[in-house]
Length: 108
Image (tube, rainbow, N blue to C red; front, side):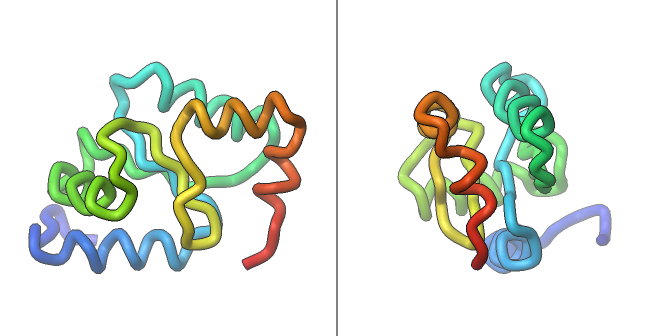
């Protein structure tokens, strides 16, 4: 991947990442809730791709595209099988109900 991403191509980049990867976490390195979400997925042994919007090229544009799709202005935001699953509170709620792993194991 080149060192810069054309801002106009942020939607295509996001589509590509969501399509190629079962679980994508839109994250920021400075966010404790992003860290907790990733730690939970690691603990449950679910592989994921994390897009750190504060360090990837044109992360601001990628995050703006995420916000336009989800209506949420916070991180983390989790996509599963190409669909928006939710943010930190949604993930924790699924975990507490005991349904997070089964939800994450669903096929496309």
